[in-house]
Length: 207
Image (tube, one colour):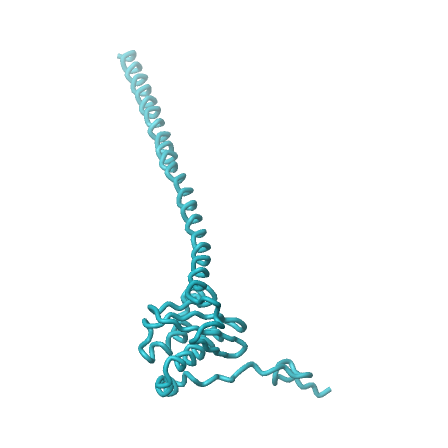
């Protein structure tokens, strides 16, 4: 009996070791599956290539707009009949109106792109045409220079309003009621000698 018990214990111990060994491959197989799941990250390079192609598209559009403006304005801005100039701060805008569908092109670029999609500046540009109901009746071509985009947008407003007067003198009353024919003369006051800015004085020191 003693021999049989010892043989049973040895067989049980061997079974326990074999069970431990059998669990090892399952634990090792888990990281292998995780490493295989990381392989689909490589196709991301195709997305970056497509975005790079899209970024290069706007260049020919600017060239096309330049050709389009030159075809619509033979002889340049000065040769056109409905031409007016608007000013605000240090910005100057020359505006040409032609019958069309409501396009607004500023310095050979679309108005929304040139004014960076700012809704206030876009509203400045469209107010004179909306006031008279011509927002889809005229195309506007602008050459703007000087100042910032805010000043240029307000200069374009005055230029469009003055150009609409050349279309018909009857437009004067509604444009005047909206204050669109008044040149805003406010500008930055120049710096004075001995002051930090136009009026800001240095701090007073008693001694």
